[in-house]
Structure formats: structure tokens, C-alpha cells
Picture 1: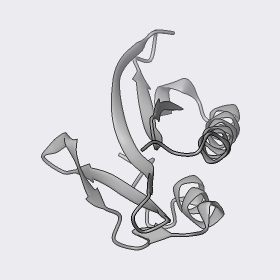
Picture 2: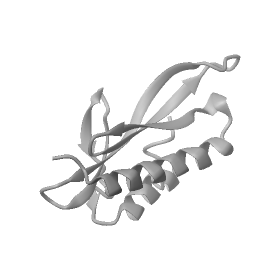
Picture 3: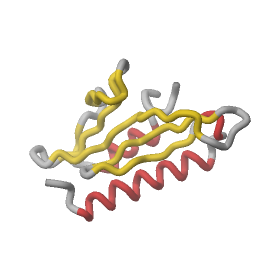
Picture 4: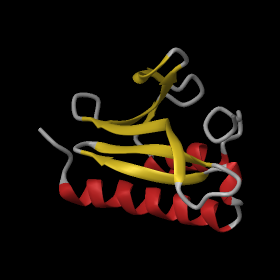
Length: 117
């Protein structure tokens, strides 16, 4: 069963706001923020550009926010070091009923585990 559409819109709008705010103050050569929609959350992506290009050279998934129906909680994942297709729980805030707390962790990145290379 997928996420209730209201919760899905909520996670997408917050992801869009985080990406918009991050991209306003970040030069393209340091990477731009974007996200892709999942059927139960979103995946944040860092787009990497060459210095002389306006086209994305490559992209890295950096965080995944997903709703767990069984736990009735949001879960936050980060890519496994060796494989960006595998996700592991974010060790500092793996799950919460508070979507704001999860999104704040991604936005502020206090442990420098998402947006920093």
C-alpha cells in the first residue's frame, strides 16, 4: 500500500523547498540539489556539474525518506558506501513520526553526511 496522497504531497513539497533553498545559495560547481519521487517518499540527489558546463555530469543519491506503514513512522536512509543502490538507516535519526525533524536533518546536515563530498 502506498503513502496517503496528502502525506506524499507533504514530503514532496518539503523536499522541493529544501532543494530550492539550497540551490539559491550554492554555485553549480559545488553541486545542485534535486529529488525524485518514490511511491512512499522521496530520494534526494546531488547533481554534479563540470566547471564550464550547464549540463549535469553525474548524479549521486544522498538520502532517502520513506514512510513505513507498519511502524507508522518516517524513515531516513543514506546510501551504503560501496553501492548507491543499497540503503542503510541514517545512524543519528533513523526514524521518526515527525517529518519536520527528518527533513531538518537532511537540510542542515549537522553530521556532514549528505551534501558534502
